[in-house]
Structures are given as structure tokens and as C-alpha cells.
Image (cartoon, rainbow, N blue to C red; front, side, top):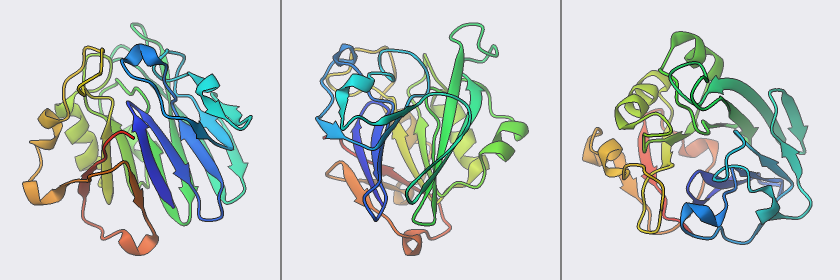
Length: 214
């Protein structure tokens, strides 16, 4: 499978036979434009401008924005209700976590998760090989809480998202505060926005991979 980072919290996941999914497409109000992309499906964690710009995805994709289970050729999708804040949604509403199983790999996109780490939620999320996690705080979990999620989920690969970059207009922290909580040998910064994975790439030890926006 291929994981392509399109900026902010947006990724394109492509299964080996070609089925593709875009997660949380964003509008240019973020501070920069989303790259042109086509997909078979789009998942939306919640209805905010930086996560629900479905019109930016070409190809007449199926839009998945509810808590349920879905099947696409070669891909199983499960959605899990969570909260966008620490007050059970009273501040910012609900958030949908999406899990994707493709090519034998379990990928989890946490959306704009804002609630504290609980055993109940962790049990619902597991198992996870690749974790796409917000780390910038303010509107989501912050670096400290993101580290706790990583420690309890114990994925093979962690890719941070929803953090401040040069052109980002949102009041969120840089990824550095999250990355500094891990030993340097566990962190790999890729000079690009794409990685290709197979089951053989999963070592059982957690690695943090930082992708650069396309």
C-alpha cells in the first residue's frame, strides 16, 4: 500500500490493486491549497472546513462521514465515534476515527481527536499498524496526549498530522514538541510526501515517520 501526505490532516491511501481513499480533505482557509487528487472514496472525520472539503477530490468518490462499516475492493473501512474535545463534544462536537484494512495492514486515522486517552477507546481502536495522529493541540490532543496514545496503542509506524507548518494559518503547535518526546533514533524525516509499505516493513517496534506536504 501507499500512504501519501497531502497536508494538514489529509492523506491518500492506495491499496495494491489501485483502490484509493482520501482522508479529511481541506480548504485553502488552512493557509495553502490542497493538491489535485482523485480517489474512489473520501472519509470525513467531522464537518469543519479543514477536514470536509470533499469538492477538492476528483473522480466522483463515495463520501463516508458516518459511524458504520464499509467495504471497497480490497479495503475494509470501520468508523468509530469519538469526541473533538475533552468535554464529550460540548465544545466542538463529535469526531469520527476511521480504520482501514488494506494489504494486510491496519491503518488508523484519528481525525480531530480531542478526548483524553481511555482504555475503552484504545480497545475499540486496536489493532493498529500505522497511526495517523494529530499532535498540534488547541483543537485536538496536544503533543503530550498524542505521546500517551502512541504508548498505549503501540503501532509499528506513527505519522503526525494537524500541526503548524510554514504556511499554516491555524493556531496549532509545530510537530517538534511531539517529536522531542521520542528517542532520535525512532524518528525519521522523509524528504517527500509518500511511503510504500508491506507487511514485511512492520518490525513490531514503533517508528515515527514525518512526511512533507506535496
